[in-house]
Amino acid sequence: MIIPTAKNTKTITDLREKALEMLEQTKKAGPTFILHRSKPTAVMLSIEEYANMMEMLEDYFDALKAEELEEDGEKGGIGLDTLIKKYNLRV
Image 1: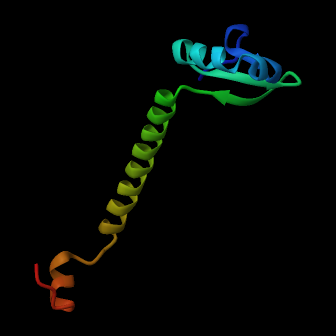
Image 2 (image 1 turned 120 degrees about the horizontal axis):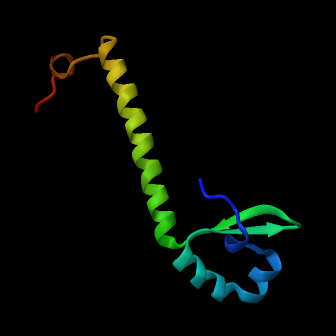
């Protein structure tokens, strides 16, 4: 987990006045926490970091769904052969 420090936190005012500079810094140094009235309110990420995080989340949820489907199959799901016969499917 990334912890906000003096090096990776900026204020809303900083964002308003130095947006491009902050974007460049985020690309080089990683996520930047944006504070509003001394409270974290947002995190600025590079597009690459964001894409990697979204890919990891998608992989995680795919793995959870695969486990769920495997468990359902073990509980007596309908096999492909049964479906083909039942609905006169051509494979």
